[in-house]
Amino acid sequence: DTGVSQDPRHKITKRGQNVTFRCDPISEHNRLYWYRQTLGQGPEFLTYFQNEAQLEKSRLLSDRFSAERPKGSFSTLEIQRTEQGDSAMYLCASSPRTKNNYGYTFGSGTRLTVV
Amino acid sequence: SQKIEQNSEALNIQEGKTATLTCNYTNYSPAYLQWYRQDPGRGPVFLLLIRENEKEKRKERLKVTFDTTLKQSLFHITASQPADSATYLCALDKTSGGSYIPTFGRGTSLIVHP
Image 1 (tube, rainbow over the protein chains, first blue to last red):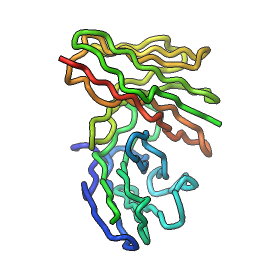
Image 2: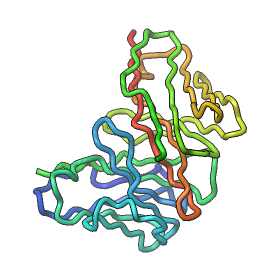
Image 3: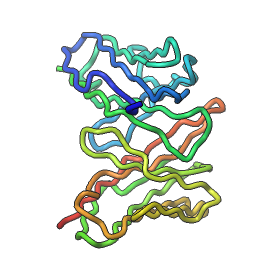
Image 4: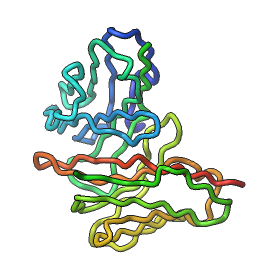
């Protein structure tokens, strides 16, 4: 296992277009988290899954944002009708179900630029 | 409201010195606190976790202290090297619906000069 993978690394899109990002977590990790990070700020929590169940989604920034994890493995984050304010780094992280001494493992992120 | 505060100003130190970064929090009762390193354009990398009943934890050149009375954690890098230059984030877990949501400070940039 090579860690948490995110695809694509970079995405440039025109305002109004839909975009979808993919995250492949560490295979034995039940929990998967999505974050957004803008320049000079820490990661901002968006949503998380335990297996295929989305347990917290109230922090998704608007109804244009949605996430899925259909089989409890990989996850997708979709942004519909993108706006320039959506430009940011989108990070995915995973962790085992139980609290642990290992922290959260992050992917390298997807850098979104909306023009 | 719950807040995690890290010094927004960059910390500049000379190689070989000890770097000390601060994380203060309010309105949390954390069971543990975590520190991460983040390089430009990359995701955060987990460094250390310290539990509420631990005063101090060490890993190689890293040391973390946790004072739940002061609501503060200090992160030390001894014998610092230019390769230690990065942004360091602290994180606390916020409970939500019985689950733990990691919440991050904005991070402090460390610059180690040769």
